Length: 151
Image 1 (tube, rainbow, N blue to C red):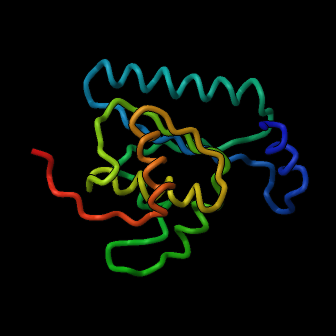
Image 2 (image 1 turned 45 degrees about the vertical axis):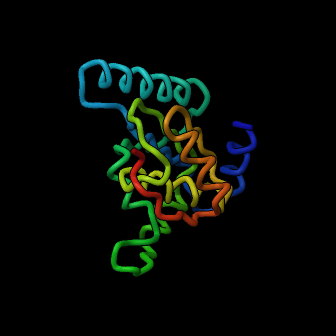
């Protein structure tokens, strides 16, 4: 799989062989959460160090800071610059220890990102909380019903 992506870079004119990776941080602010995220990030960087000798750009965002990659916005306007930024991404990694329900407002950006990944065939690794959100985004095709609070 990795080599098929690498082969694409040999054929892509103007790509300049720079790989773009997004790591989404869904870990809490406690010291244990920060430690686990640093281990997760270091593992990804180490894997790319071993397998990808060419330059790469690794961006880290929290699960609340993904708006720069989402084409839709609160005002209903489609942002072309955000579509281009999303399109440049080659790999997306999402992990964390937050407890989000797929239909909650706090999960909306991760939900939208994972829906866009499913629609475009992006390489995404969604684990822990994001795995359930990915399943919900794919199964509902992005349509979320209003779910009342659980009692």
